[in-house]
Image (cartoon, rainbow, N blue to C red; front, side, top):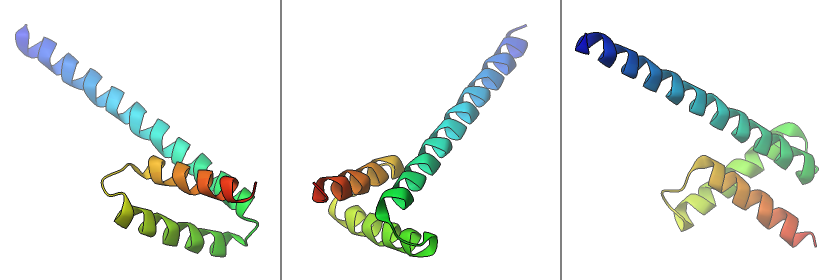
Length: 82
């Protein structure tokens, strides 16, 4: 009985983690798409530019999430265009 309950709890935890990972990936993909749209660069150049900026931010602000770096790059670009 206890073993069965533990198995169910583990299964639920795995499903929750999987859903969160998929949601996070889709948010990251949307942020990358947003950067490509506002950068006005060809796709490959936009990707290179984005990676360079993320690497620069990682050295300045270590241990942040990928989503945070993307949001920061987009925020900075939009701010600089005002």
